[in-house]
Length: 217
Image 1 (tube, rainbow, N blue to C red):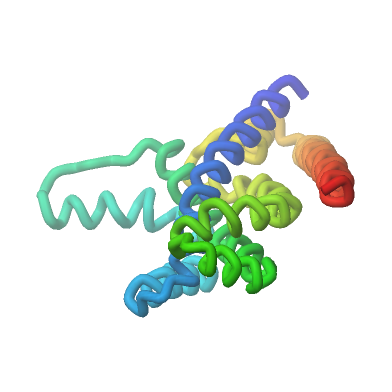
Image 2 (tube, rainbow, N blue to C red; image 1 turned 180 degrees about the horizontal axis):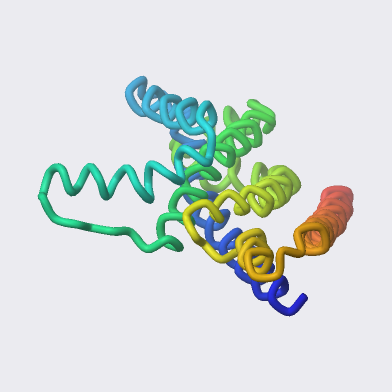
């Protein structure tokens, strides 16, 4: 159990960093997705479609194995990537695509009349987005962002294939020594369940607080 707890802590901090970076990527791409510029809108759509349309496992392998191989072909020098850097990068890029769609949906859920009212007051499109639309949209996207955190928490188990010692990998290393497959995998399952249920509870509390805030407004 202590070994699995260490892996669980690693899983949580990897997820936290990946989703945090993913939120930053998603905010930029989500806003770009609604841009009036055809090129910007097209590039954001390509990014979202490519990332969401391919498995995270393949993305992890491309970043950890494919990119160093490509750099070796170009430079003739070995440039290995740290497993944690590769894993977090892959998860962040993957999360960014899903967050972008969450942001886009959140922005589009705001009444168009508010944008028109802001523009009639002389605010630019950027000012309207920054001061009027995004603050309201962010309140609405907090629950789906919590769900994205849970999904990424579980998806970090894929990082075990490149040697990141998160929860699943810690269990695999212990099984390799003791051959106690069933109790270890059962322990891993219960720890993932405990983490996801705890986060789900926090999301529910956040939704209730936001609902109270909206009623008071």
